[in-house]
Length: 91
Image 1 (spheres, rainbow, N blue to C red):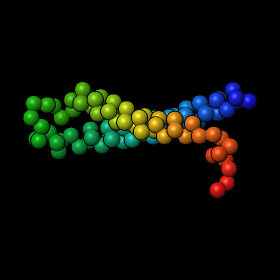
Image 2 (cartoon, rainbow, N blue to C red):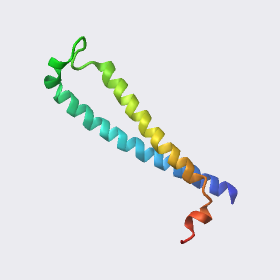
Image 3 (cartoon, one colour):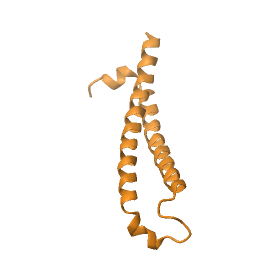
Image 4 (cartoon, rainbow, N blue to C red):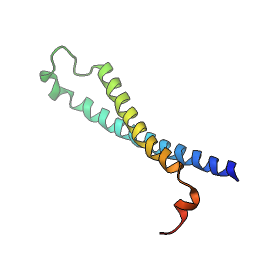
């Protein structure tokens, strides 16, 4: 019984993180397409950088991905610590 509860809680965290990864990946795809299409407008404002600097794109994607994972892992971990009987009990 205890093993089943632990596996349910691990599944909850895994499902939540998978959903967040898919959502963040979709958002990054839209953001990358928009940014690449608008680089012509930004290029006069940049000094010392090319408008399509790959390192900047990779760094921004890594920061957004890390923030999304951190923002979803903490609530999923907290939710997995609640007893299932308490979570399913009506108010």
